[in-house]
Image (cartoon, rainbow, N blue to C red; front, side, top):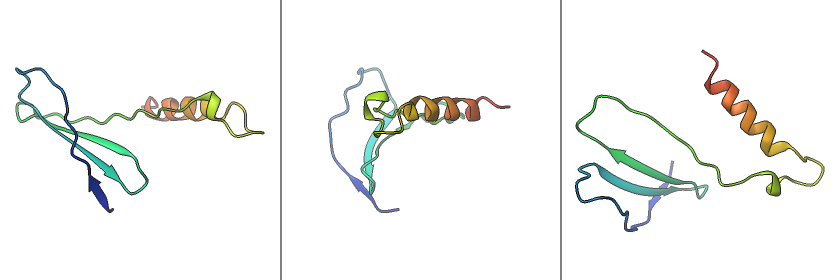
Length: 77
């Protein structure tokens, strides 16, 4: 996975001791990595900045379906 790094200023409160790093992977996906040494937990989150206005012609409702499908998969225990 060829990852590039773009140095950008990440704004945070002065009391925030976590480390932040932004990388951009080959498919232009921007990733924000956050390291917190005070916890033994980890998590992942994804924000897809598209919606129904980006649906291709003939596939109206695709964004809604994919969001529903992803949410269903995440919450099926």
